[in-house]
Image (cartoon, rainbow, N blue to C red; front, side):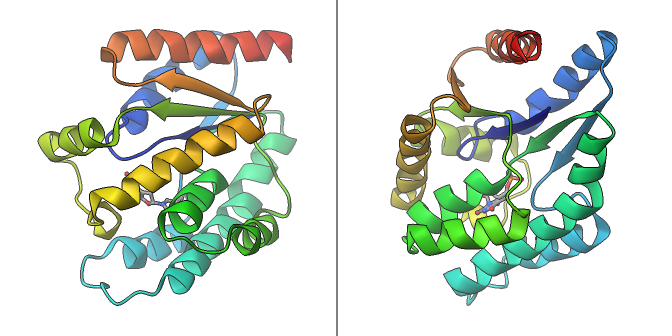
Length: 206
Ligand code: TMP
C-alpha cells in the first residue's frame, strides 16, 4: 500500500507522519516513511538546490525537472522495492505536489507536467492520497509561527498558494476514489484521529 500526504504550506502533514507510522507499526504493519523532495542521498542534494533561497533565478521549467529527477531516484531506489517487499510506504508529498505547485501554482501546461510526472514515476500511482486542506492564509501564518525551515518555495506571493490549493481541490474532484480530504484547520489531535481512521478503513477495505 502506497499512501501519500499532500497539502499547502502550514497544513501540518510533516508532524502527523511519525505518530501515524508508530500507530501502524503497533498494529503489526511494516511501514516506511519518506518525503519529497528527498529520501535518498541524490534526492536530498537536489532538495538543497530547490530550497536554497539564493536560487531566485530558477526558471519554473528547471524547477519542475529538478523535482522529477529527485522523484525518479526515490521511486526506483526506495519506493518500488519497499512496495514489492509488501511494506506500507507513506510519503510526505509525491507527484500531486508537482501538478499543484508547478502546474497550477506556476501555471505550467498541465498536460506537459503530467507527462513529465509519468516519466519520472514510471507510472507508479498512490493507492491513497490524503489532502490536508486548510485556508491558505491560515496555513502561511502557521508556517511563520512554527519557525520551521523557511525555503525558496515558501517565498511566493499568496496568490500562488491560492492557485495551489485550488489545484489540489480540482485534482480531488477528478479522482475521488484515490483522494480523501481531511480538514486541517481543526485541533492537531482531531486531525491525527481522522488520519488514523482514514488509513485503517482503507487497509481493511484493501
Ligand atoms: P515541505 O517540506 O514543507 O513539504 O516543502 C516542500 C516544498 O516543495 C513545498 O513548498 C512544496 C514544494 N514542492 C513542489 O513545489 N513540487 C513538488 O513536486 C514537491 C515534491 C514539493
